[in-house]
Every structure is written in structure tokens, then in C-alpha cells.
Length: 85
Image (tube, rainbow, N blue to C red; front, side):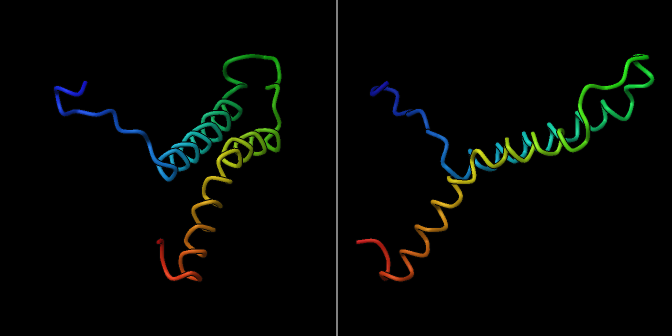
């Protein structure tokens, strides 16, 4: 692709972390709504408790927490050392 001048842009750490939090929020919302309306759809009880739904959403977001932690630690290092060389 060197002739077109267009390069594929890699997603940044902040974008990936934000996307994971949005996905986790959507996951919790979708499963919560499904649990709320499950009685209308099926006579059987829904298989997940609210605790399990929330925990699975938190775990989805927590998987990408080290990315944010890395960004924060880099900023602290930059403040302490006076910027990047």
C-alpha cells in the first residue's frame, strides 16, 4: 500500500479500553433486560442471577484495566521525570 499513501491505523490503548467498557455496559444491559422479560418468553427460570450478570460485565471491563493502569503509570512517570526524552 505504499503507493496510495493510506496506511491502516492501529487502534490505540484508550480506544480499546473504551470499547471494552462499552461492550461490558451493553453486555450487562442486554442480559439484565433479558432477565427482566424472561418470564414472558419462557416458563423456565432464567439461568443467571443478577450477581453473575454484573460480575461477568465487570470481568469483561477488568480484562482491559491494565491498559488504563499502564497509561496512568506512564503519565505519573512523565510528571516525575519531566517528560519523555
